[in-house]
Every structure is written in structure tokens, then in C-alpha cells.
Length: 97
Image 1: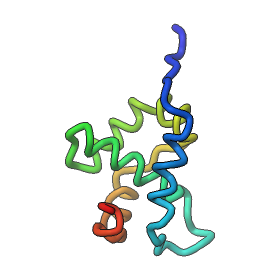
Image 2 (image 1 turned 45 degrees about the horizontal axis):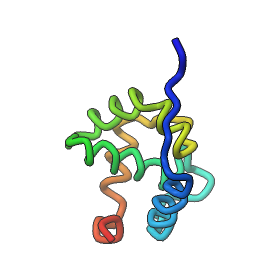
Image 3 (image 1 turned 135 degrees about the vertical axis):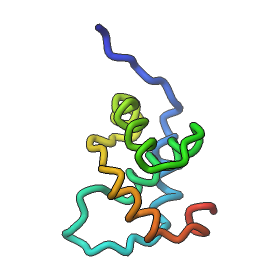
């Protein structure tokens, strides 16, 4: 079976990452397995698809791994516990801007 090729505007990744890179990452440097931008992209895509729970977002991300890799360069999918920690830690107002 042939892998699906996703076509998006070439600057999509840069625009989205540029927005998320402005959000302060409160985690301890050197103890980070997943870049904050990667996690926020997965959360954003899941929420835009109507998902509400971190468990659902992780399943969605696993199903969209090819898209996440091709478009955003995301190689690893975290556990739902990691997403929950990020959601508890990140400033919601900063994300909504």
C-alpha cells in the first residue's frame, strides 16, 4: 500500500510553530522528550477535529502519524498522561492568541 502524500502550503509549519514558539515552556530543560510545539500541534488538531479528552487526541495523533511527520516533522506521539501534564501547565490565554 502506498503512503499518502499530504499537500499543504509550504509555510504552514512555520506559521503554526511561530505562534506556539511564543508560549513559555515551563518544563526543566534536559528533561523534555517532546517539544512543546509538537504537543500543542497535536492538541490543536485533535480539538479542531472535535475531540475533548487527551486519550482521544493520542489515538487521533497515532492515526495521523504520517500527516504529523510529513507536514510538521513530528516523529513521536506521547502518552495521554504527557498531554494532560502539558494542558495543566500551559497558559491557556497564550495558546488562544
